[in-house]
Amino acid sequence: MAQKRDYYEVLGVSKNASAEDIKSAYRKLALKWHPDRWVSGTDAEKKTAEENFKEASEAYSVLSDPQKKARYDQFGFDGDQMGGGGFDFGGFDLNEILRSVFGGAGGFGGFGGGFDFGGFGGGSGSRSTRGQDIRTRVTLTLEEIAKGCTKTVSIEHNRPCPECGGKGTKNSSDIKTCPTCHGSGQVRQAVRGIFGMQSFSISTCPQCGGKGKVVSNPCRRCHGTGLERIREDVSVQIPAGVQEGMQITVPNQGHADPNGGPNGDLLVVIREASHADLLRDGVNLFYTKVISVMDAMLGCEITVPSLDGPYKIKVEPGTQSGTVQRIRGKGLPAVQGYGRGTGDLFVKLMVWVPRKLSRSEREKLEEMRSSSSFTPDLSRDDRAVFDKTKNIF
Ligand SMILES: [Zn+2]
Ligand SMILES: [Zn+2]
Image 1: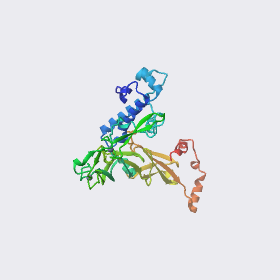
Image 2: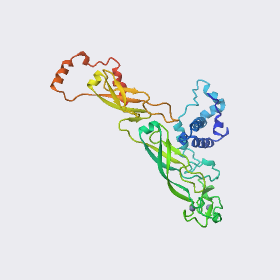
Image 3: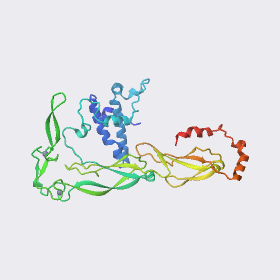
Image 4: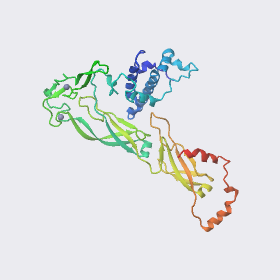
């Protein structure tokens, strides 16, 4: 295993950083490296992102827990090898951490409301803006999910006006510094704080809308906004194994920023079309096949659907109703960064019993009714069929 980096170094904070500094440092790293943001990156980028994300999450899981932090401060990584204590620095619930960091500003009484992502982007009055994200949906079949695919989505996004090049006017001399905010794009207003202390709130300048500049002779095409809404087809790489509700980020395909910052992203939410035959649960697929009593008793070959076409399986003589056959590797692949390997296809065999018999059929069966072969015998592993499998479907 590679040498571990110091947790403080990983988060880029000093040893005496406050809980809020630690949280804010982790929040920035998590936003940057979350695997969801890198699904359309190269393999090397994805790997780097995943590693950085895990490293930061592990560091935060320890430094955000006063007990673990104290232990780490005292003993370093050796703290978990001291025996008895059972200190597992590596084991942590990622979802719990993300929820605690991004699930709202609660828990820190010092803040007023509406401050959720206040720390993002440096905070110190920098007006680093970016265009708005756009969210769209794409519906995929299980066959598409199994292999991964490229989908084209048609979206409308703002782009710089071609007439004025995004400036809002044709002549640069018509662009003046905003007289209200003197170019900062922000205005400060005195407000009364919670404990009666005077403080300042900073908000976007109402005259220039944050641009810091005003245009006296606006472009006729875009009316001075500098932007134009256009419809475009964007192709989206969908990795194999995605699930309903997952989100693919296509960088820069969101709206252009009216202030000249980077474009927003296009967020593509995955919908999963239900399959005519197969049921999905994570990476596994399930299918129920009804067979005749004779096929169950005598054995046969059957064809079951799979995502890469019909698949033949053998039904052994003496197969019990409810038997589940597992076909390894015929499920779905795990989406990169969320697991390993490929799931299986589970086929449940149900035996159909005839409702009507002809006179001669009935007579033949009556002859066999009392034969010992037809008396249920659960002494063998058949019992497992009735116990274990009942929860699978
Ligand atoms: Zn224009
Ligand atoms: Zn202004």
